[in-house]
Length: 124
Image 1 (cartoon, rainbow, N blue to C red):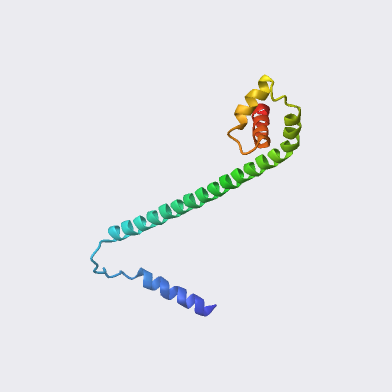
Image 2 (image 1 turned 90 degrees about the vertical axis):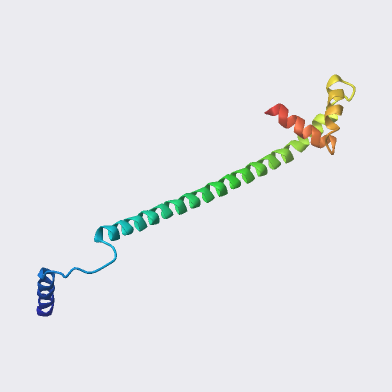
């Protein structure tokens, strides 16, 4: 404990002595201004980095949500296959709806795919 007290008193005496002025190329105010500028630049850099990270997270969440929606749509289409096939089996090809559906189905790879889309659209 005596050693600590001795060091503290030496520091106190050293601090009470008048300090010689240091010769430097910049006044102290300019040095502190540079330090503040560096600090502000660091803070700005940190915020920019956080913004980028948050945007990456948001983009990943958006992509995951889109993928989830696609999967749900595929599952819904799969479930509609039986309903669409039953609807096709009952459809009279010479009725107004049957004739319209024939024209509608020309754009699809199969009548079943067209019926699924038609049923999806009519249920929305």
